[in-house]
Amino acid sequence: MSSLVRRFNGRKAVLDGISFSVLEGEFVSIFGKSGCGKTTLLNIIGGLDRPNSGTVLVNNRNLVELSEDELAKFRLRNIGFVFQDFNLLLDMTVRENIALPLAFGGKNDDRHVADLLKAFDIEDIAGEAANKISGGEAQRAAVARAMVNRPAIILADEPTGNLDDENTDRVIETLMVAKRDFGATIILATHDREIANRSSSTLFLSEGRAILQHR
Ligand SMILES: Nc1ncnc2c1ncn2[C@@H]1O[C@H](COP(=O)(O)OP(=O)(O)OP(=O)(O)O)[C@@H](O)[C@H]1O
Ligand SMILES: [Mg+2]
Image (tube, rainbow, N blue to C red):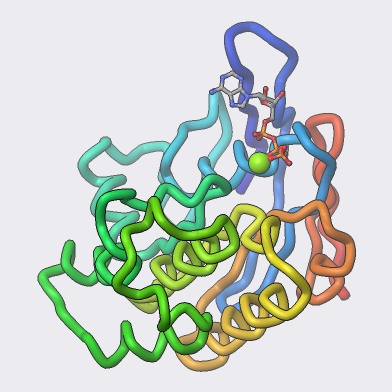
């Protein structure tokens, strides 16, 4: 990430020259108050949005230079995204939602999906439509879906915002397992200092600027 600038319709830049780098397999938290640009930054890292200027290098490819098609392929191959508002497909079941990234890649792995349902303690609601479950259940399903393809990079936008302590631990622990088992790089946005403290480094975002601090 180098000299990243993102502004919306002539307003003051939300990201005003952000530079930092993340090593493979690192767990980085993006910490800052509401409106500081956490979601904006994650969207850019995940190729869902483009900066006004700057470069976004992932494995030596500059995402800014990719076409929409190339970006879509890049996302499918490399990124698991936990959206702040979950983005589950509401008329599909929890199990179908989680299996969706596998299906996009022409794959099918019921065993792995079952393991994730168990890891996130949502086995009991696996057959429910996603519009019939609680916010915390939806959040855990969204994290499971982001991990199912064993992506190199997991981008998680406040993935514990709707969870009690037990389920917060469950989500953080399962992300750690992903990091250990398949070397996933985790970038997680939060405004919870305790969660940020569990990462290996924290990017503090404020007033369009960022400071990376290693622990
Ligand atoms: N598509 C958009 N169009 C216009 N303004 C936007 C857009 N997306 C974000 N913004 C603005 O950019 C700023 C940062 O928003 P962002 O969603 O990145 O913050 P955040 O740190 O994720 O906040 P929260 O903790 O509440 O989720 C806000 O002032 C927001 O209004
Ligand atoms: Mg946000």
